[in-house]
Length: 116
Image (cartoon, rainbow, N blue to C red; front, side):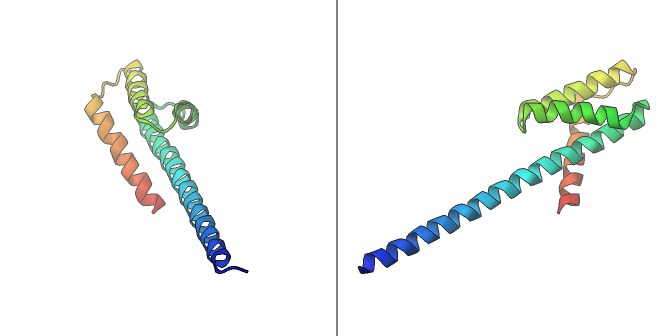
């Protein structure tokens, strides 16, 4: 076998290994993001339900369905904030966007800490 053939085979194995590692890292990152968003939404639903006596499970399902349908992006986060604020106003509870954003960030930090 010519010497360059052995080197090429090592190169292919290295590329394959790097590809597999990258794929595992990508999947792990996606799973962590999914888990964090689900946990954050659970904490938001708990907080909302404490304020309103709304059923936690039904509100959580609503948040999860809409959040994951929209995907992990800024638009989904903004939608959640508007949705919660509007729902709270329906119960006569007025919370500023700033306070809602702080709650969301607090719950995101908590979710990441719990994940870690």
